[in-house]
Image (cartoon, rainbow, N blue to C red):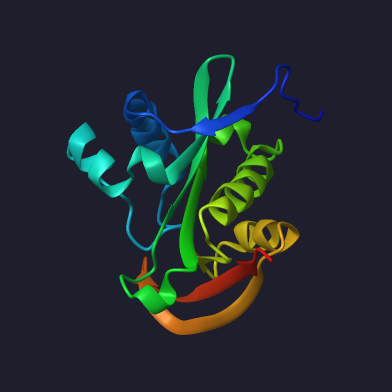
Length: 166
């Protein structure tokens, strides 16, 4: 039986009030299968310093935050200012229903209006579902850092992917 979202998912700019639900989503989403280091937020302030509202969009359904996508400069160099590195998290109950795709499409438009020309991301080679998802969203593999991490006793590659917005 295919799951569906009954009501519309809206994408909006993040607000300070979204920090708590987004911290909860992070706890549900991130694990050793999809992240080399699971984020641990000491406080709401700690979260907001790392994930400021002006650099995030959230997905909302029925008044509940169900996911987010954020971006940050990959470096502080001016010559690299046309690039943004993204991260995405969707509540497990809403994964596979198009929320992630809607977030990706929204961040492409949002960051392009801010002068970003290229989005990039990093994904573990063991996270094959995510790699397929990113490829369906227009990302391509640009490189790979072989055996970059040791996770649960296994070497794991760090896959670098990108998407040009022009």
